[in-house]
Length: 532
Image (cartoon, rainbow, N blue to C red; front, side, top):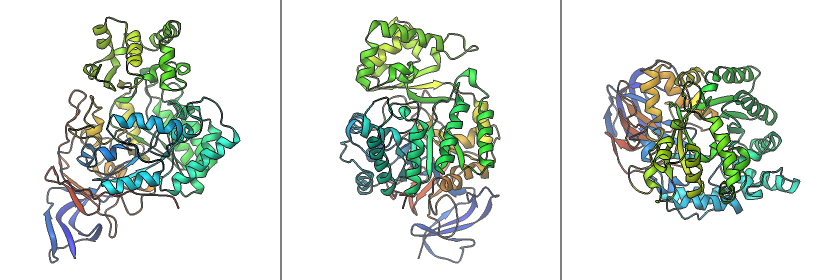
């Protein structure tokens, strides 16, 4: 029995080939037929004339993790047409959780009123399955999380016993279904891992059935090219696919450097290496305010970092270094006005969300550097900011590479409730529609069919998602129907909680989750496990 027939749709099948018009029929969670279905019966028939029917979009770089439990409707993603997202990026994953890693996760989860009741991926995935989600979910295992389980926040090489223990955690995570290994090499404790440690962990993941290494590179600014070389070397030595996460050249002095970094990846691919990148279509990155501190001050736990910042001599040195990095002339370099405060942990400073750092400093009657340190101290390092550090020409250049896919670098959020806090980066609600509005119709960097391929079959192949990312017989019925001339983001830095335009229907595993622009409340998503 057919469950749904879409009639007269413009089919963009995910392959990158030209669109064509016909019917598509579903039977349960799978695509049953492609072609004329005028003589066939089904429980529902959708008139899709004037709509593009594409595979559901795959967000390869998400940070939802435990928020799948807090926002199972996945409002911010499902209304973009995202039907699958991959968490566990930047070296931080939702499991395994022991020691320091467990304490960090408990602190983060408190903001969303989540009780951390799990330690392994098996435990967590079981919770997600019982709770239900509106989209499919998958995860990488983070080297920072596994390192935190073994050695806490220590900045040192692990001894032989610790290395074996960490490798065991990675192997278990892959056996429980993690899709590969991730690293976040500007964050503690992930950045304390050297290339030897990362290569060994990637090889363990490969042997367990997940030959994938996704890396937030060790440097996305002055030393971008060397950081790309390090990631490629790890991939070649471990014989795994390398995914360079949210690829960029940060800082005005580095604009244009992506031509060199992409050339390095092209050369590696020509040698037979498996390598790709993902990108989001914005010029502001979104991360911790603490990343502006000198690296020497960022070692250890948050409490240890705060204690250093409270020392007047150390604070003076930090402010001197920070002022060297940021001036007041945007033509010469990055400025304090380039930093937008988006979220803080306490209610004490809740009103500062949405303020530029220089405006916040003026309000406090402090220098910008002093104001930044004071905010980090008061919030015990829990301050998120958007940094306007990239060039849109660079973003367009990255999109021009045929091995680039799309990742939001954002978590699922609701329009209300515990996840609707702070002034979010607009990529949270707008990433995928913005690609069509800005880079397909606007700058014309990509054809429609190629944009869809970057969001569907390409990421499915890179991350090992079987029978997803294409419109083909027997493929899973993850589908999005949208108006090609209207699909666009509406979220801005000032009004980030805003749903995109142009998306009419979203189906996940054959069930309708968005109908005529409204959420149906359905939670048909599944945990997608990899490994052996």
